[in-house]
Image (cartoon, rainbow, N blue to C red; front, side, top):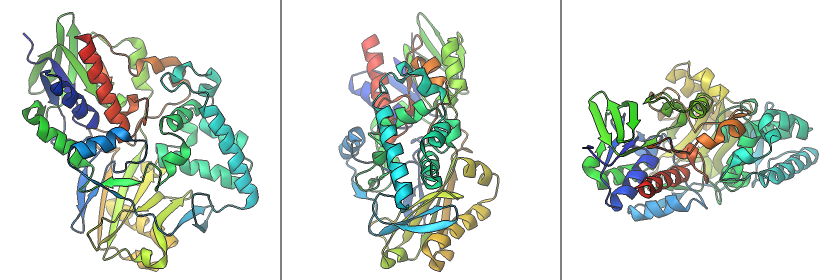
Length: 445
């Protein structure tokens, strides 16, 4: 007899919402989490006595599942500070930025706008629930080659380099054009993905986004078992057997709520179908080191600055004001992304702190030189994550292997933000994927 009806592997947002959905339908569930905590790629930490998120933190318009869950759990949101001007750095020049348009000259702006129109037209050609059915030509070209063909000015090309690092944490040459189009469509447009007010970076959760997972885990109680890494899954006509170091758990079905690269590292008996294994071999994560510094107060606001900066030169790609209402402490958050993450991940925290501060001094002035505290998280170094923000698809992967992304394999179902149709790579997408996998299980009986 099975130990439980369903095993969920992974206690991130996707796994927890899958378990929560099943439990509410009267299903017996066990959640097995490798870490000694819940939350996956969301994690709270502290800087200068203030709770902050060193993992995923933002939610914005259109992410209805996330807002509904936040409210259902008795949590609240607050807006990201977005008053004043930001800065854009490209090719050694730092320029003040008002509004959403980059501070480019008229020719570069016209070049960027025509490229954007072309990109938007291509986005409309992608069947969001089945990107693999799109034109193979879109999947054969890298995003980098498309940018080179469509942008004449260096400023416009630099803009798309920034977009690639900021949204995907990798270079344009590493992704298929089709993947960028799919992601943009999934996130309701490029302006939505990049925006603060009215965009995906609009709001944060009071107390930190990990509270969403912590509250769900509290509801689930003993259903969630921590420090239980799964190393293999066997299935036959009778059910599944999920192997851990602390012993096996048998069930009728299993939901694997892990990023594809980690799901591909589990042992399966029988072996995965070739197309599924080929897929997980080809989905690398981006490289992100999230860093924060704290000051006695948010002094940049007194100067009419929003605390935001974007750089094509690096090593920090983007910066936001990460201060928390109710505290006098001023906090700035930045990201070593993609190639910069890989380079600076091999250096020391002391070196990364200084590199971050050096960038802030370039953009905001000498007052940025002496923060009172620093915190960081290298997500590529995390054993049970191995990169952020999510997986990206190199050329050829969507059209050759895409159908295997969500398709169950026997009694094994897949969840995780990468498998979402809407808001792929975001917390809202993780919730969608968990709900979808739970309903698959319920429909299978």
